[in-house]
Amino acid sequence: MGISPYEMMKEQLEKAASIMRLERELLEVLKHPKRVIEVSIPIKMDDGSIKVFTGYRCQYNDFRGPFKGGIRFHPDVTKEEVIALAGWMTWKCAVIDIPFGGGKGGVICDPTGMSEGELERLTRRFTYALMPVLGPSMDIPAPDVFTGSKTMAWIMDTYSAFKGINQPGVVTGKSRSIGGSVGRREATGKGVAIVTSEYLRIKGESIEGKTVAVQGFGNVGSYAALYFHRMGAKVVGISDITGGIVNPSGINVPELIKYVEETKGVKGFPDAEDMPKKDDILYLDVDILVPAALEGAITELNVDHIRAKYISEGANGPTTPEADEILSKRGIDVIPDILANSGGVLVSYFEWVQANQGYFWDEEEVDRRMKKKLSRATEEVYRTSEKYNVDLRTGSYILALSRIQEVYRDRGLFP
Ligand code: NAD
Image (cartoon, rainbow, N blue to C red; front, side):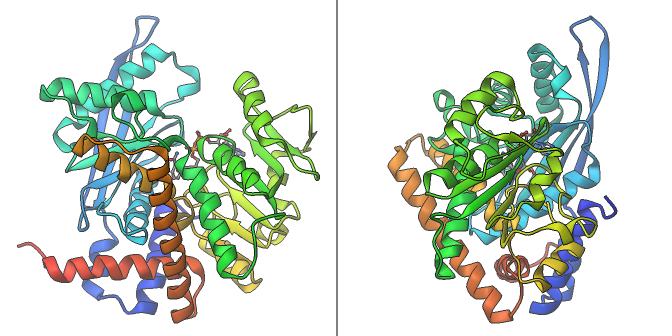
């Protein structure tokens, strides 16, 4: 990929800032992270050797509240990527109007080749290294690629052990038994389906009967596919790292979820055809394409092959600015990541609220609040885009930046 995620994020930021005439000095502040922490994480491997991993936590901006964002375990993690993802978290929390800033973390490692014991020691030692900068009102991590509720439990337990008191509010994405929220696991993917169907409703269309292709079948992609399926859309193509599958009459998503639990990949699912190349998923002739794997999926090199009418970004940063420009000229609406996948951080916010007050809501309550917040954000992004006559990404940045600017004006700059 030519352009780095951080360059991409700054380009998107500058474009919106110039259109809305954001204060120059504020733009300068927002182009830089507040703090980036790099740590060495030595752990004992199962074979007795000691291996030192590198981890990062970027605390991008906290004007609107404590830093919030996931932790990723992946061999391709870089400092630049972590900074970009932390910036996107800042704008995302502002778009859906929750009182958080943006942060992100990552450890350079290949979790697929590590045992559970090694992963636990890595997570606990990473938490220990970040002890001084984490906390329920300072910085609250969550799961991301190759991390999950178990990782969050280790972080919460390590943090609580050092503090000497139970601190469930230090992370979100925990299991229910230790202060998690109902609905958090499926929240990001479900949110993608809710936001997309709300957007279609605003445009006078319905989600029912629409054809959908999903790239990535992890936490985000699998639940997005499931909720599109439940809403009456037809999911005709799905891919993951093992390959891609297609069925023009619609893939039975609940069956595929069971299949993947056993086989660890979508390839070879009996009720569909395998695709020759997994990237062909992006070029299917569908109504809605959901990139839900990693950043940089749609670039100027492959954008001309895209045939979908709508793109709903489950992943963070799947479309480069050059590709965005071309899609916009071709009249393909891109529902941007900072709106489309915001359901995850929204329910994380609900989890944090519940854990801090020690009072837990039922599924109905979480569902009602989630739909209300996501519908409102979709409506506000649409209205902002119409007002400035810009694409949805620029509209969502303008909405986020105007909220951040308001706080900046009220709080002022220290000293
Ligand atoms: P995950 O690890 O659960 O799943 C990633 C999926 O992508 C896997 O199915 C993997 O096989 C697949 N994949 C990887 N490379 C691929 C490729 N080249 N082609 C096709 N599939 C490929 O991760 P996740 O939590 O689902 O996150 C996916 C994306 O969504 C990331 O960009 C992440 O930052 C973003 N996101 C996640 C959350 C969350 O709550 N988990 C919230 C917001 C955004």
